[in-house]
Image 1 (cartoon, one colour):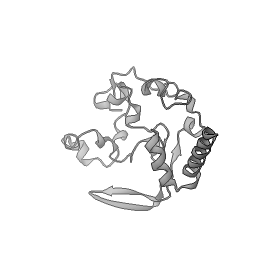
Image 2 (cartoon, rainbow, N blue to C red; image 1 turned 30 degrees about the vertical axis):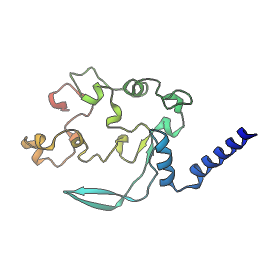
Image 3 (cartoon, rainbow, N blue to C red; image 1 turned 90 degrees about the vertical axis):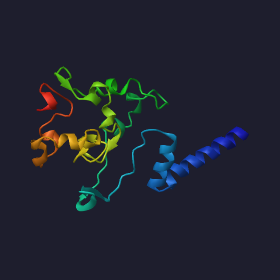
Image 4 (tube, rainbow, N blue to C red; image 1 turned 90 degrees about the horizontal axis):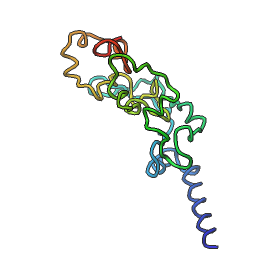
Length: 177
C-alpha cells in the first residue's frame, strides 16, 4: 500500500509541475533534472544589440521552432529508450539525417570535431537554422573580433559572415565561398 501511495504522490507532483506551473517555472524545474529541455516559447520581441545597447525591434517576434524529430517526439531516433543518452556521438548522430560535404579541403573546427551543437540546437531554436543564438555577429562567440577587423574587407562589411564564408566546409582558405 505504501508503494502505491508513493507513486500516486509522485504522479500528482509531476502533473502539477508539467501542467500546473507557469512555463518559466516548468522550464526551470525540468532543466534542473534533464539536459536539453527547450526554453519556453515567448512572444516578446527579441533584443538586438547596437554597440553595447540592447534595442528592441517591436516588429520582430520571437518564434521558437522545433527541430523535426523533436517536434514529432521521436526521441528514440537520437536517444536510447527511456534515457537521455545519445545513440551515437553528436556529429555521427546529426549525419544520420543531415548531409554535408566534408571532403572539401577546409572543414570548420566544430564540424570536424563532431560538435554540431556548438552552433545548432538539436531540439529547437528561435533563431534561423536552429542556431543557439542570434545570427548577427554569431561567429564572434568563438572568433576574436580584433583579429577579424585587421582585414580591411571586414571593417567595411555590412553583411553577415556567411555571405562570404561557408560555416561548414570549403575548398578555399578562410572558408570562403
